[in-house]
Length: 263
Image 1 (cartoon, rainbow, N blue to C red):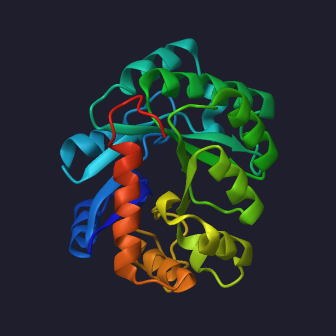
Image 2 (cartoon, one colour; image 1 turned 60 degrees about the vertical axis):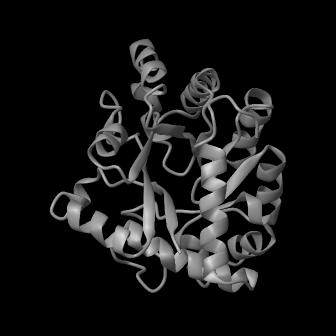
């Protein structure tokens, strides 16, 4: 039984003291691969994920500019992303999207940068990793206009309910469930997790953030993705083995297929 953590930030300073031990714990827990998200601390450094993936065989990675950092973008950075997106260990583009909770960048700037990065991902033939917070309608509007018939993607750390899940699935996205699905009050997320097609679910940690029950409140790490898999199995009435096999196969089909292949 093996798992894939499809979204973690192991470049974070939270892991500077014990990063190698964290990776070893993940491998020992059956997490055979991890995806290092390449947004890092933001521009001008866009290679955080690539550095980890080059150092460790068990890592894949992404490249992209987080919506928090949208105001820091320049034409030169977009050109750099065009090149990074073609790195052999980059399997998706992101995390990109809209965040209206913090509004660290003006919303119109977030939308413009989102659209520009969708174009880069399309040209590279990569699926996209979407971050959306308090911005569902605008996120879907952008995707419906600029990502139709594109290489699909991942709704990272899915936090919506059945209606948001339906719209994402109609656009060809996978739903990636993290620690939130284990929280007792996350009723809408849990309902979406019950109803989502088996071939469209993924698991992640978003480490060091959003640790699952029973680790809630602690630093998250990739080994804890097993707790999320257990909760998904409970919600869906299947074995943890089935969740592990399905989510691993889904990741491989979405992110390890030839670039530019259809959904």
